[in-house]
Image (tube, rainbow, N blue to C red; front, side):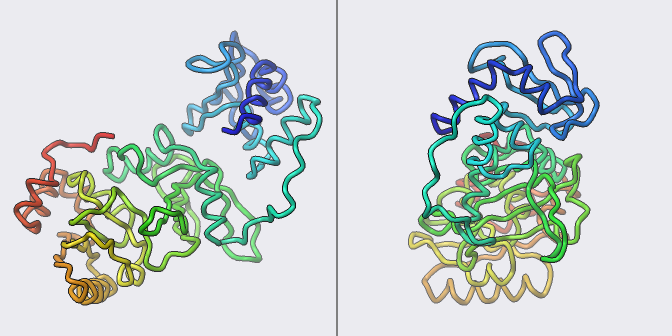
Length: 347
């Protein structure tokens, strides 16, 4: 957090009850906490804000948690969510106004809004999102049989990500799993959004719960840094499912069959496993990628699910049978090198 933002957060925390009375007026104080229904100021007791405590660390004043959704943060986060502010600059201005402070630095005039769907817009969305641990995003993945993700992986969570069915429809907000799309050098070129229902148990009940933005061709959502062996596939949940049993094998999710077929190869890779979906598009992507990889001197091996995809295998077969079904498709030395006998991935 920038120093001026951290200073505002501390000032707000020292006036936590006044902040709550202003932005969460339908709540009430009970002991050291302010209780209300949610960040939208609904009546109830799900969200609680600590009104007193140290400036930082465990038990700090101003920290809040919504027990129903898993959302949490400081009072700057609360102001942003309660007012629907998606830019840090606007949130800081609102906080200064509440604290009766003079305006902050004049923003640079060359800082223009990023075009919708651009790489810069994707980078800003990812930066605004929070770590996935303890959020609805983690709950959603657990419901898909993906029990944990490793520290440093490209997944984050946004509690109120914008969604528009089309250009003529009003904007909605839904919780969303956010994944960074990166090039071979690790630069973010895009982002993938999976909008979730408010329980975190399924995708949101909207027409297009999955969408990508930015520059995607050749790039992907990367899990680990590729060396001589890696795996590639279409979907994020497909690759995360494989990662439950192959936690140290570098992987990339290309996000679609067409993008999988056009994936760029790291210069160090000598063997590529392609996790295909059981459909004509998956077969075509596998054939195209195999042709391109072979021409580049890369050995290509297919990984096929028993059912429609690897996440369905994980959920319906169970992790032990899933492990057995994948094991026989690997080169023996890769079984020793990459396959774990543990039930979960540790971060």
